[in-house]
Length: 495
Image (cartoon, rainbow, N blue to C red; front, side, top):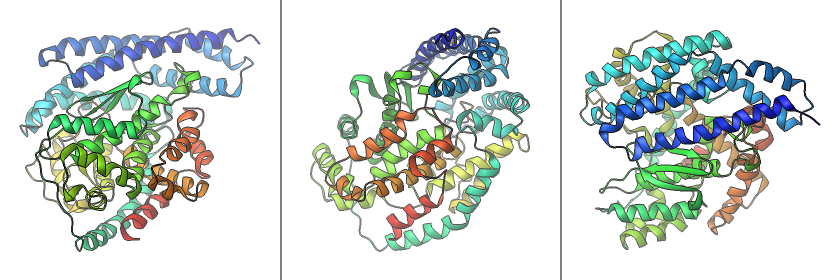
């Protein structure tokens, strides 16, 4: 049957996908390869591309095409694709092109300066750029809120996690605040009685890199469709056809880079296995960033810290760095599951990690709503770190509010996705164990495909076909249920 309006829309979105491909590779290069003097030219080029993509998403012809396509005889998947097109169109049309360009320039400058300001503990220097980023984020939030009827913060969060609200988050995080401190104390008391052998460095970077790539192969990453590089902050970018992952190395420690790579491999495999028949269309996009983080945390925490997986990882570690009691499977598992409050979010264990996310959420939400200013962040950070983790961070801006790249890049509303992702990951593995009762034994035998097959069928192949709640129900029988996360922590650390 004839669907001319829908066909025109799919052609437009295919073109958007190809241009976004170039934008994504330029962003990866900016983080991984670009020399310092290239920042202004790259910022201008990225802003130009952002404006071009915005212009295409706000083409005056699109509303009529969307309306006509609604009347055409479309299959269910095509209707879902059209729904996602309309969502993208609505978000784009809420923002003027000039704002999109100014945001790209401000974020590029702030992120580039942050790389040298963080090591210098230079909060005062950081504020100069960050005030501009924050002002533009507030402007964007106000426009999106007016369009969607959401609060300003929720309107920004909706870009990453459609359907999630701060009211729902407050209930979820409020519950975690009640039970998490006691669980952490009980786990630390229990682990304090265990003997753990610490690895002894140095750990040559070349050997670390080779080990990381071996772990990626163990986890099924397709190196014909992606690669691993180095950046100041690990990330997974690129496009499904060309996934660009990064990690970072320290010669005195190897577990951070190894497990960071395992984390990013979860993101990478999700991207590489999104529905290929829809590639270039919104339906082939990841459903939400909490679902994306559920994949990285399924790899890093659920599978990566599973004793059965660690038993297969341990020989690779020993081969990389030489025989040592620290690399014995049982000891390596104890190292990977140590619970201890720390300053750095990306190095945090899975039990204390939610506290880092709650802290950032409780600062960035009032920051966007205008209840606090950028100058207020360090004092609030110090107070919340003491309250949530019992740590004194006064004067340490580098390991405090300067540690993450998200605020310099104006990614306000993203942080909650990390803890939501951990909750979803626990829910996926609970569903897997119901479907495959001998799941843990199979992981112990090195049958990791049982995990990948379940994720492929229930998450990866679904793309954005369903709302997040509907996808969760189809995969696990229920929408997000944080009780699975608590049960996972209690079983792993107190069982």
